[in-house]
Image (cartoon, rainbow, N blue to C red; front, side, top):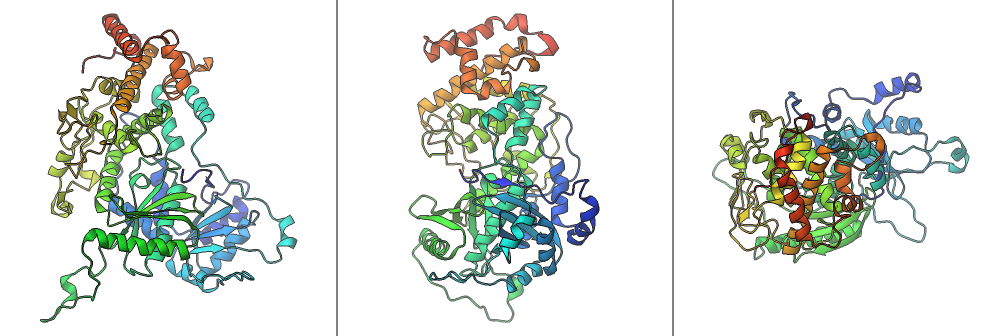
Length: 583
């Protein structure tokens, strides 16, 4: 996938041994009160989902975060460095062009540094002293970007004096490492929080995503000077994991936007433009040109594919320097609005992301999802199912979209392509839930709920937060939150849905059995989430004595065993209650 093998070094962090030497340099390079400082404070409180410990600090709007990240990226440069470099001298050299706010190193086809200056003027100053390389018999296409290549003068004399930059691995953990971490956890709640911390996008990875979009924007701005290239989807909705693709769209809405302040007198000025038959044709032409430009002139852009006849035309390419697989569309504002909605749901309650990450990881472990398009359930569909489930709790953990719409004011009103995408955008106006259920209980009852859901007649609808009759015959129907006539899971086949149901029932049974007889952490036996994520382990736990029975009979027997023992287990140890098998 996109960021496979990408290793990131944490931001400039001064150890106790180096503090005396580098404190003056840190004072020189730091900018108090900058966006990065705010983001560091936010990062310290992320990645934990303790029940009943909600953060009371004011939460930023999605648009505020986007604008701050974009502005931060515009002050940032990407530098391909030698494998060995003196970090202190490197920073001192760059600080000649202005104070540096932060930096980090990562590996992807070489060693790279991401350096954020405090002012945009520092980037211009660095560009002004940068030369176009001489390539001998080959010719270089001159392009003044923020992607640089650093070379050492008299490198042969300096190499022996330089130390290697130590890069920590920020890719998703291996199955073995994840297994060990989960088995050593104190509780199922701790397991879910551990998985979230290991898989969620890091601060550095997020900054690299916005920087990549900003570099692509520099290319597109040659044709459309007031355009913006904005990330959407998993990169910004708080549900993205390390290694996910980078979805971005070319926003042209600000170009030539009419405002009353621009007019005076009896005259009205309009730009001379080319006319095309339809909006789709315009999109195809724009993406065709931008795709060609990225292919021919975009530094680090390789494997460019122009997929212009798709329902949503796009340009697909790999950004070699960052390691991301990128999809570029244009004016995809509904997708950005969906990203904002998921961002809000993820920020409203700390349990939402922990549960969603675990369910999605469970689905991938059992091949219910795939990076290859097909009849599988998508991560987006699973996330919507988690949101719907949390809306159905008593009391609800998440509000419905219709309720969020009632809290909206005139500033929040949003109509895109005729679709009403209005909902309150200020997180601080939404009352926190009084629900205090543990993640362990929520995980178990998620599997029970959807293991017994009437998929044959009901659809999932987070606008109203209740089951509704299916408007079509697709095996799985999940209503698009904004384009309500669309089914986001229309691709899912009956066999894949049945596989999901069977595995959900098995997982509910495994967690229920463990509630009665849980192995101790010191036994090094898979338990809780670990038992669910490793297919071979899960199969051994639930199927070792039932290998010859068909899946439907096996599941029926499992549920019957739960039902028959429900009365005697209703007052189980630690107050755990037996799961219900009623839909």
